[in-house]
Length: 276
Ligand code: AMP
Image (cartoon, rainbow, N blue to C red; front, side):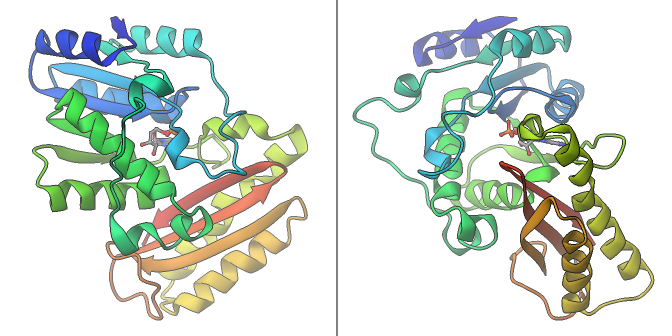
């Protein structure tokens, strides 16, 4: 496994890799969710590359950039074990040199849901992803359904700019009790960890009601709100039932829909979603 931390070293290593190349962008502190992306990339490409970069541009001023969990040695051991070929671990200065000035803005789909609560978040995501695509020139890139809006944003970016790669979305990997795996789950104390089950449980309940014929979006939102409100350690930020491709809120679930939510559990802000 080749590990590089400069753009120059990345370019020369990239030149020697067999095609097609699958890229898995991450912020590190890897878990089984990330490894599912790596496994999907391994299965579909001759070469697998992973980037590990905690991207300051996608964090707000009062968010957890400084305290975001990091463990590079453990991450590299996991990636080596999984048969990854190339890992890029740039510093902030390497990713964003002093004269860096471009911002990629995908417009309204980046301004609802997570984008409404985290202003500028998806500009940060789109900017770093566009740069990674330029540096790696992968044939495929892998993203998790866990970050559903990120998948919509990245697909929009690729379609609008005509970038020559395929975006592959991998299903959310969950803990046995349903909690979506996340690097931020380490922020939870044992009681909060138990309480956090209510996120996925409330989504599963909404899915069950949908299967039983419920089509009124507000009824499904209310169901999630009421379920979460019974868990005192969890404070719901929002729940949305939206068109899965435009992210516009629905009144009636008469097309593919994304039920998404964010909630505070202690100091952790967790997100989860399901597709209907
Ligand atoms: P992050 O390191 O949190 O930026 O995540 C890197 C990639 O892994 C993103 O595409 C995430 O959507 C994906 N990912 C994170 N958690 C999960 C999960 N539980 N299941 C599937 N993919 C995930």
